[in-house]
Image (cartoon, protein in one colour):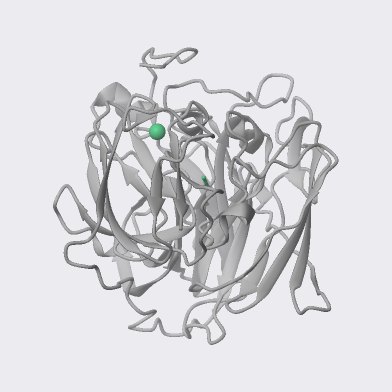
Length: 463
Ligand code: C2O
Ligand code: CU
């Protein structure tokens, strides 16, 4: 196995539950400003820049961000709109910006090939044509994504429909709240540890939500929508509440579910998103946590992905009077379904050590060629002794089954990233995008970012 530089020593389960003081108001990433160009495109500007942030009494942390020193603004656009993004790199290193979950031509995808040199600018543009969803953006430089994301480069990208689904809280920053979850190791001088400390990747003991440590959020409405993004590079979160209250999953990676699904917990591996609605009573202060989970891994391997940890993430403070919430609609969106040809073209991917089908990423090799617009079945197996996941660029999929069993209803909607615990197999029905380009590839990879950096990635073209 390629585990150079990793520790495989015994880790203790980490617990911050009940120890935080929730002293800091949760930061809400600002909505990005935009202008409309003469050709009707909505134009956003993102500048990748170096700065410093205050996370630790020891002193400021050198960080990177977009249009600021940590994370980036929330981009927001509507289905049918043409968007153009002027990305400027003022960092000392080359970077890329990948639009995770977006259907975009491969040359604008921001994967490993669209490198923006220091001082250079990149101007991708495309027309949004996919359902309302919570997507995100982050760097994808082959071999240094873990480091660049850890420094702070990531942001949310929200897509809207012309006629939004009624009955869901939808006032950004008020009752519709982005939650970007990350973990860090902060050294005594305030600096971030930038490289992995476990086989899974970098697992930190300091939790950041939207870049805030020990955060609280004032709640003024009976119902709040949370757009939760696991932007950690390695940690698997099992989202739940300190009082075990139920909450309702309304959307996953690529859009809203057909119907709301009440749950008590929800596992999100790196790169995955969920939209959930939580109901509050006046005056209460429940805490959003990551709870120990059964990842189907034995002892130490579970700890390796943070699975035995019990972590406080965010305290909600419901005010004495709460505004009434709209009634949750019984139906939300059209189901994630499409016709599969019989028999559908099936491809098999085996994740083992840091390889996919026995190969490491080679930027000059195209691993798969797919027909533009096709629907295929991809059967992805983790035959390893540690957890992985699988993300496909330029497409959304639905999970046909996990180890032959139908997915739970909260995982039956649009997805672009699927969690694969030890020895799990998922069959995915993937609808590929309409853009064809015989030369420029999209990537597929494990989204435990250290694994991707080490080469657990492949490339496909659509023709
Ligand atoms: Cu979010 Cu190829 O990644
Ligand atoms: Cu992996």
